[in-house]
Image 1 (cartoon, rainbow, N blue to C red):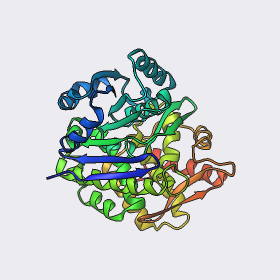
Image 2: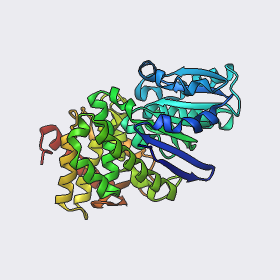
Image 3: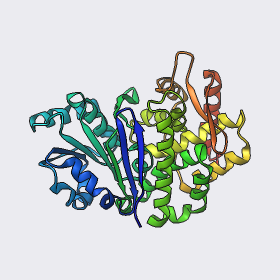
Image 4: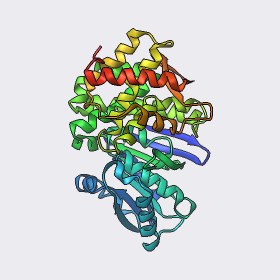
Length: 368
């Protein structure tokens, strides 16, 4: 069965996407032409390279030269110093304006590699080969690139759309159970806020998805990617409706920063962020029945214990969120299943609800 090609149109042309079983083979001819006789830089981490480099064997025959650039695993790769190290290595290796870069790994590798490509010699063409659920359904799509600062996640970055995104579903088979579950929260986010049919598919096939069955995971990856592509095309640089994709991320990013990007995976932090957003949303328009559907899916996927954090620390970090404006922090809240909106909420209400919510989660009271 052929993997359908999805395209995202933007101001620099199009990004071509293939996601599913056989995606790498389906994209092989186009990728090969793009790489032919170029110097290719592959940004990856040691484990991904060990597990999956062999799958790139045919692809790597076409560039004129190939340089693998290994970075640390996870969020620790997303630093200004790592970016500088890559730029300097690429210059020493003879990188040019028409060189190519491929990111090969999860969301952190993609964020870092895309940022490096966007700034190197004022921008070179690049592509994503995402190897995690989180990256295939969300992080690799849409041209957002960034690195972190100690004061906040994704604080320095730029929009730089890739030429290609190729997500081979077989790469997901080597993920740990925790990585697979964490990545699924990004698909849940898109389904609940933007596509009820996607949410229902996840609800109905969650057990085989969590068991890692490719036949259950592939359609979720493809549908979630299509949802995000549609949103991004309508709002390329997050001036309006694209902000809805940040459902769960306002508190989620704060939790990651408060715990040094170590205690929670990104998807797990988003899971907690969605649960807190439900508290704000139920105080407005969202029905308890619909909120409980999302709570039920989050509970089935599972979250690790909430790390020890203080409300004041989280409030400071939330105030630095990239959606914050002079009038306050904008929260993404569901209004009903399949529809969300943006609301500026007063700091006092957020603090009060956050204090109560953390007490409930820590005591186990959020199991409703």
